[in-house]
Length: 402
Image 1 (cartoon, rainbow, N blue to C red):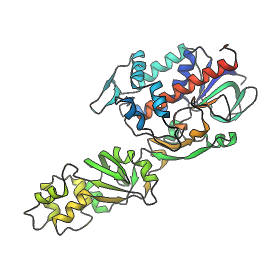
Image 2: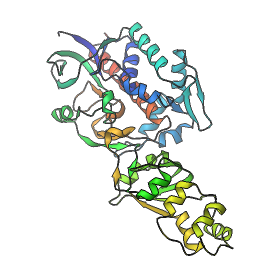
Image 3: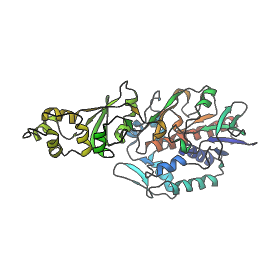
Image 4: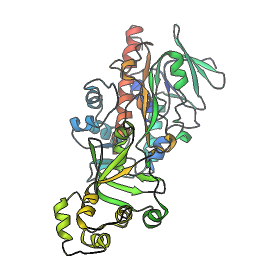
């Protein structure tokens, strides 16, 4: 292949598609490359759960959801402010996709699916002149007068600017496989190893507990890992635990030498109140607690790990139940990944300092956020910033000829 393009976007997920859109709207020639037969594959998988596009909470709280090592102070507030929740909803409306905000604050398309939005988005990109090159797995990048991009099939193209948006390391079947790490090493770009985020954690339940509680929810609880607390619902599984609270605590758990969570099964009641409810109980304390404290089957199963001879100790366990965890589920099962390009490698426009003209967006950068719309918003925001930076870089270098 003999091809030159002003901007080469590598990766067809939300960050790459958004970067291509912003650059093309600025009038710059864009070619998007992806290793798969079609773009937006992980986007479509996310759509099976309703496609949580963003969240309606205020900017400062929204920005605080993004964590990771070495993130410059105020970086995420700046990134989100550049393309915030309202902007994302307005963008969807421009594709004739109506959205609504649920009582949780999460924002979804009214159709609760990704396919119609993706079809219209791709049509818009084509109308803007974006060229799509599928079945192109990027394996090398060489610097010169322009950047030379090599693909797994032996072909290569050149580009004035590259926007890397190859995703993290979860859900390999969608193309988000982290196979770009050796390429970063060859370019001297420092990164932190990829790790599972927003994933389940393992605990060896006994057969008796699994028989009683596998697949059953544990609702309205407070879960702590170190100094961090999360609120919500967990699901007891054959391998351990899943659910929003343990996803939110992933970073804290990974930092522990011996990861463990502490669950308060009855956060609305004090220890003393629970004991008072058991005042007349003299035996069968756990069965009495099931009725008097209104405990679910899963909670009863977990509390049955020990024998209880008095209400006081059972109440303490219900308020402070320690569950040791052997580790996270495999990276490929995770909803997202932590790790990636270190923030110190990038300037505020998300351009690689060592390689001017290469920009990075989306999950390739070392950040993580909980589920709830923050992941998608992060990809859109970083894709927007990288594309704006790329357009500025081209116009600066080409004398406003972009």
